[in-house]
Amino acid sequence: MSIEALQGWIPFDQRSAEDNAVFDAIVGAMPPFVIGGVGSLDEQPKRVVLWDYAKKVNGGSHLPTFRQAVGDCVSMGAANAVNYLAAMEIIRLGDREKFRPAFQPFIYGISRVQIGGGRISGDGSVGAWAAEGVRKYGILAADEPGTPAYSGDVARTWGRKPGPPQDALAAAKPHCLKSTAQVTTYEQVRDAIANGYPVTVASNRGFQMRGVRDRGKLWGSPAGSWAHQMAFIGVDDDSSRPGCYCLNSWGPDAHGAPVDDAPPGGFWVDAEVVTQMVRQGDSFAFSQFDGFPAQKLNFMLV
Image 1 (tube, rainbow, N blue to C red):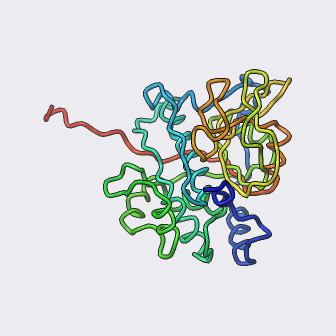
Image 2 (cartoon, one colour):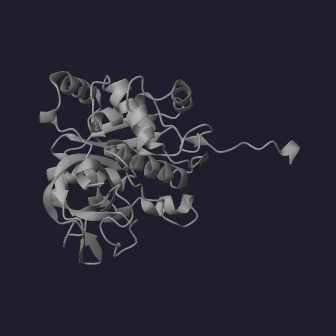
């Protein structure tokens, strides 16, 4: 499948007035992005990468890199953000929870149908709709009993009215994201990640498919246009070349092998390009997730 078919973010100028009104209402009701207390990288280590936590909940290995089958990138970026947030909370905050990966078609469905109203006929969704969807309807674990394996057909089926099945909605409801906030600058993205909060990024900024090696990292070179959502999950505010790591969903080999310890399937993005992307207005920091409680053993039965 061509990369054009995998670009499923719907830009503002391609949405109906009704769809943009839903977007405006969602963002207008969100709290402003504020990090309380000591929260800036000016006062913290310059490099914070959320895959350090993910590897600890995954037996020392990176989480698998998603590979889209259709234009469901909005759900992919949101699921990546949720997964890395959950890993951070389990390890850094000591939450007594079990890591269970998010099921992308559930996010795709609730974003398009429950939040967006089911008006989109083809593939695609909106970053704010996914952010609001996981806050309002929760996260379905991919290993929830009865949940099908990911496929493009499942994503498209759940992305049409009436949306995800009722049993999936019921299973996801206890596991909601508590807070989302719009971010519009590199500094906000930087400070979000520094505090453990991943960021979904939806924009039309494209890149060359193969990354360029420089200063111990694999960098994305801006080129062309991608109507696409991804996730920022790492930051290095080194003054020589500050930037954020952008995890894509086109498979682990899409952009070349990482030079550093980053997960495969992504690339570093220069700070000024990060700002260009998030200034388009459909990027969100995810924080505080009601995850999946660890199994409580009945020791009388052991």
